[in-house]
Length: 210
Length: 210
Image (cartoon, rainbow over all chains, first blue to last red; front, side):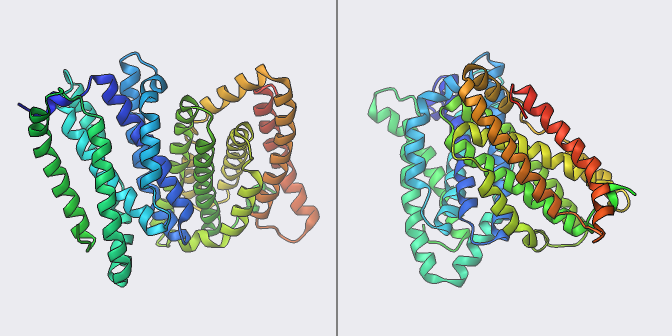
C-alpha cells in the first residue's frame, strides 16, 4: 500500500498544480499591493517570479501532452479560488504568512504525489515544484516582525493553524480515493504527518508555536 | 547634440527603471484579477514574468553598484504610482491595452536613454530591457476582440491616445534637462518622434487608429 496509488490521473494532477501556482502568483501579487513600504514590496518579487515559473513549467508539461491548459485547469478553479479567498489574510503579516506556509505545504504535497505519475513525467514535474521558491525574504520579514512583537506572534500562530487546516482539506480533495476509508486513511496518514512536521518546522523557524 | 546627454545620473536612471518594472508587474497582476475567464488569465502570465525578470535584472545592477534598491527607487514611487492609477484602466480590454502600450513605450524610451550611461553599464541595462516582453498573447487577445467589435475598437483607440500622452509626460519627467528649452527640445523631439512611430505601429497592428 502506498500513497502514490492516490495520485489522480495525470491531467487532473497537472490541472490542479498549474492552477494552484497561478493562484499563488495572484495571491503574492495581492500581498505586494498590501506592502507597507517599498522595500517590503521589493522583497516579495522573487516569490512572485518563482510561482509564475512553476506555473509555466507545469503549463509546458500540459501542452507537451497535447492538451489545452485552461480546459485542464478549469475543473479546479472554483474550489481553489474559494480556498484562496479563505486563506489570503486581510492584513499584511497574515498575507505574508499565508504565502509562505501554503506554498510550502502544497509544493510538498504535490511533490509526494508526483511519484505516482506514469513514466519520466513524475520526476520532471517534481523538479519543477522543487525549484527555489524565492521565499527567503518573506521568512526574514516575518521573523523580524514576530521577534519585535509578541502580540503579533500569537495572532500569527493562530492564523498558521487555520492555514494548515484549510490547506490539508484542499490537498485531500485532490486525491483519488479508493472509497475504502480504512485503506485510504492508512495511506494518507503517514504523508500528512510528514507535511505537518515540515509545516511545524516552518512555524518554529519563525518563532511561532504550531 | 544628442539625446543621451539627457540621461540622468546612473542611480536615478536605475531607480526609475526598476520601479517602473515593478509597477508594470503589479499592473499586469491587477489585470489578471480582472480577466473574464481562465484562459485569458493564463495568457497574461508570460508578460507578468517578463516584467518581474526585468525588474530583477535592474535590481541586480543596483546592488552590483553597492546601493540599496528601495532607497534608489523611493524618489520615483509617488509619480509612478500616480501614473499607474491614471493608466490602469477600469475595464478588462483597457487594462490589457495599457499593459501592452505603456510597456512598449517605456521600454523603448529607457533603451534609448541607456546609451548615455557610463561604461559597459548602458548596454547591460539595455539588454535587460530589450528581452522578450511576453506580450504576444496580449496582442492576440486585443486583436481578436477589436476585430469582433468596432465599438470597442473606437473606445480603445481613444484610450490608446490618452495612454501615449500620459506616458510621454512621465518619460519626459525622467530626463535630465539642461534648462535651455530650445536645445532640450531639439534633442527630445527626434526620440519622441520615434517612440510615437513605434506606438503607432503597435496601434495599427491591433487595428486601432493612433
